[in-house]
Length: 524
Image 1 (cartoon, rainbow, N blue to C red):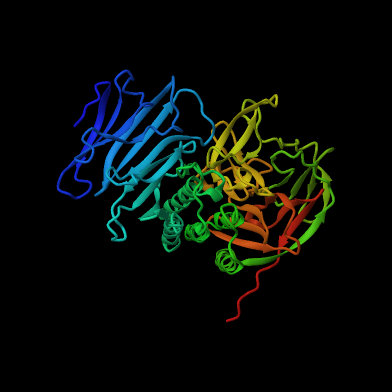
Image 2 (cartoon, rainbow, N blue to C red; image 1 turned 90 degrees about the vertical axis):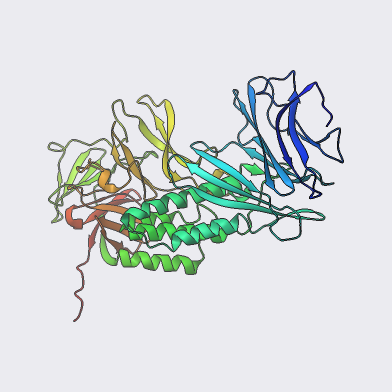
């Protein structure tokens, strides 16, 4: 074995890579003048009977950041009978361009005429996430050539249920051929596994976490998400043409887990986000899930009545409703001139002397103000936009509702515009609903039992109302019903009375009062 005294051997593997009974040595070397943590001059050299002086078969990938402030970590392992995997990772003090590769992973056949089997460029994970890449380069199809399976396992700080998916290449005489069914097949299996579960209330939370992480993994792996972090040797993103079936199963899993938890609000919100992650469900599949939701929240007709007092106009920011019920079912309407009380018998009176206008702004005093939401590309979660009392923007706050993909990260012509509804906003908790999805608390029971005026809960805190494309979803604990309306769209600022006796919303520039019709007794 020849030795270049100007270079130091950093690590080595000895094995019979060509099956001739003699072992070869594969070594990763660096210039002796270079510190161990700097591997910009690294070389992978094979020594054997056919290469007694050594042959360079790979070097530090040129796209991996190098220079002052960058430190390299190198891993070398035998992952198949005829192959090794070289993994070079850079950590730099200075910030880098978003989703630019910091890691090069290469599967190499040291003694073959064509040494490079598969090479990947890998960017850092999204904020709040990490992922592992495990390589198995054994022969998968029995042709005597080492193939490549890279299993990517994603971890999240917000949803601690790991999810994995495979990337697969089969090595052919003409070169490696990627299996286009992956990672779509893996995501589909994960989705079907979750959709097929019949979880109890406690197990449903694990389903929600695995569904969320499967979507995070899709965003990491697939070009269609607009935010891929793993690329081919030339820097091109990996397409996942069959991912739609797996993403569809994730919607089913989320809706069914919510229904198993007797949470019709979460189930309706999951359906409302259909199309946020890939193409919307086919009408047949969506219809089946809507039927499941109808069984959990049976429809009930409601009568709509226009209310004369004009509520305060919207400012374009999230707000508490200018409507609020009192315990006796009287409806308060905050107008530009004060507060009007509409009693249950229809009589309206000026209540300005007895009822002060309540704050509509979400946040007061030293608490940050909620000004909107953002769909970031550098992390998976939707962000709450915040400002201080003077209007100066503050650091956005992530919530457990995932941002749509590709959303603004791709070429989507329109973006979702979910409703933004505060539930509790204090120094202890920032909680609300984005398109009906709860943030800031694990369950509605975690919210303060006594709601503030203008929140979409009854004065006793037992009933919640949320508008949906099909009507008003009125829920009390584990029971719910859907009030069907002639025109269910364009409703906002909804509130509900004790015992679900009535609800009220803003429609356009006026208020509307909704009263459920009496339930029809079933015939014996």
